[in-house]
Picture 1: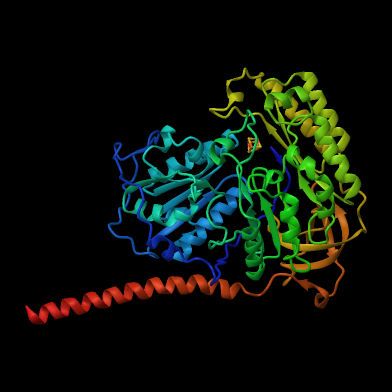
Picture 2: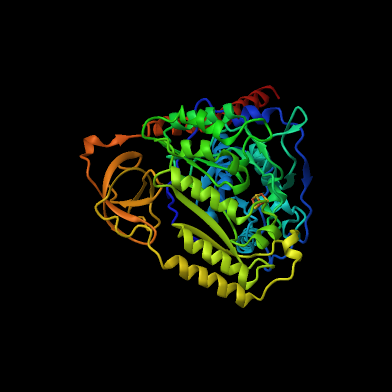
Length: 544
Ligand code: SF4
């Protein structure tokens, strides 16, 4: 259960820069694609319940003639991976569609954190297969458990192989199975993943998500993500800074740094999160903002002083997501979280004291197998003490292959009862009550879920809903709060329109034309081949 309103932009924009590495250049030299002819398991994948429609097999694939539907589950790291895959497919000439029924191929990018999201992923595979679609799977589920029976016969793109999506899609359309699950290596060493400079189609063209590292340094007993993303591997600060610059040039006005643990960033390459952040703030244009993603308590503990300074920087949101998971030291020990409750409280107290208006979001797992009533009371007390404005409440899910899945579970009704008690506590306080009349500077970057408002965030990354006025998206404006709800505030703009600070550069046209020009190259190539064929036929006709 998640208690935080998220706001998505419905439109999908092409944002490909002319500086991007061209996928055709990259794929030209790829020789080691592992292609296995598709074995017909009665023409079916395991567990498909109905007789599947026959798939169309393409002998040769002409880019631009197939449509691809892409669906993503999970965290912002996964969203960023999808954006990269879509960018490459589009740049290569494939048409991306939101109409799944009209698509030739479905690319499904999965999340392995919770059972329900894996269940919907599995259902989607079965649906795709039964309706005659080619299906390619990606993300943490196939990476963490590639031998799962329901993935049999499917092409797989591993989490570190997203730069090879075009090869996998092409071969799959030809009826082959391609599975790329290897780690990315340079000079024999595992690296964080595909290059950050790849083309992207951003779900929200104003927000660039940068995954600064993959994996983590922990071994949490309930976590399946570790099986997929592995040990910590960080991108070089220069590569991250270059990507941030590129994103601002392409019209973004907000950067989200993400990873499985941003606090651990850099430990494998001799740097740290604060060092990276100080470099990044130098390239953030005025009125644009940076949001630091999720960090576990252990590794951020030694950077608290520097983090407090960075979170006060005018171009960095005073926001940190620090998942505590439990208020009981015994449970934290069984989870192997590598910290105790007082460590977490120290992080919160230290930063709240120094950073004005700091928002700390956290996560709780209710009903971990060894959690007693007393342990849960400790969690309740801690949540009551801090009244976190954003609290992600999850029931424990035993993920296959994890140590926690082998532990004896506590009865489901108790887990539900605890989840409800915590939910009731969360619903009992109103973090924004009494803010009417307050004035905030907000950066407007999103559209609300109900499509009725624009969403801006103040320095504390608190959500402020605004009327949908022309030119407001991508602007920084002063607003006065008119009313509040549990999750957000409503505001009115107090600046005249000529005082709005436009943060997003008007380069959308340019970005799209970059994709268009690649697409038109494909079309020109097809025309050229057809012309050549016509000439050869004519010549043969005349001479024989
Ligand atoms: S820190 Fe723990 S929960 Fe997070 S990805 Fe690593 S092992 Fe999983």
